[in-house]
Image 1 (cartoon, rainbow, N blue to C red):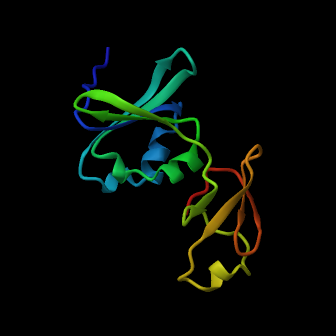
Image 2: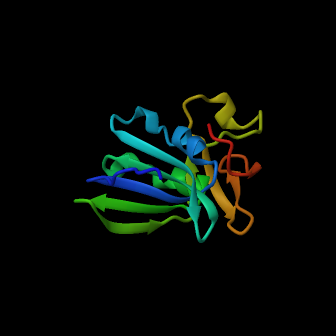
Length: 146
C-alpha cells in the first residue's frame, strides 16, 4: 500500500477526475511553487470509482480558485493548518475569467492589441459556455487554456 504522509500547512485538491491531475498541475502552474507537491493518480473512491488527488504544502494564496473552478468545478479544496482540515471549499464556475483562455476570433481586439486582457464571461452555466467580453464569440469546452 502506498503511504503519503499528511501535510502541516497547505491544501489538498480532492475529487479530481481520474487521469486529470497532471493537466491540472500544469494549468495551475504548480511547478513554479517552491514547495512539496504530491500527485496521487487513480486512487480508490466510493463516490467516483477512481479519482486523483493533489497535495500541496504551501499557503492557499498561491492557488487561483477561479482557474480551478473553470477547469473542474467539482473539485473539493481542503485547506490544512496544523495538520488538520480547517476549511473545505466547494468550487463553482467563475462568472468571469481573465487571461485563462484566448478568443478564437481572429478579428477580436484582444488578438490585435497585445496588452489587453482576455476576458470571458459565463453566459450559460448549465452548458458551461463562456463568451469573449469584447466580441461575444462563443467558447464551449473547458480544457483549452492560454
